[in-house]
Image (cartoon, rainbow, N blue to C red; front, top):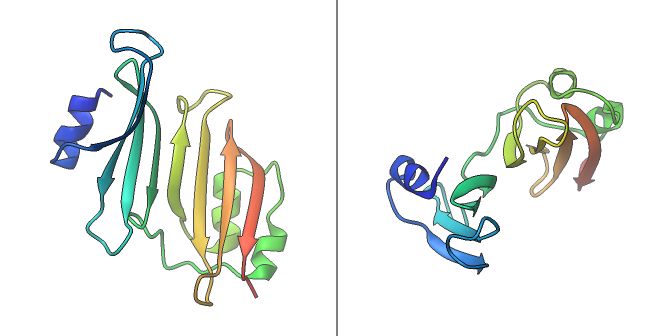
Length: 141
């Protein structure tokens, strides 16, 4: 998508957070940020290269599902699993925090987060090419 298409969907212009290269150059890269309406700090960032989306990330815009992750569930999740396998262990969808590349390609990378039961506890899972390649947690019990 182009910047204009994204701004139309969001309903406002974004704030330029970073810009590299010259306009018109295929490597011209701009990161725009939009504030979310779901609470303090909620935002979305979209990276454009040559006026096409190459990455998107969010915090607090999509809080995921009501599925709660525990340390026991976290330990059951293993590298190489698909997102559907991870969802089945945790019991629902996570929040899509970041997405890069073209869906279906080997370099397509997505990061999902799941909230724990304790304040601030969470886990993140990074998938590339449809398989889990990294997992991390903070404060799970």
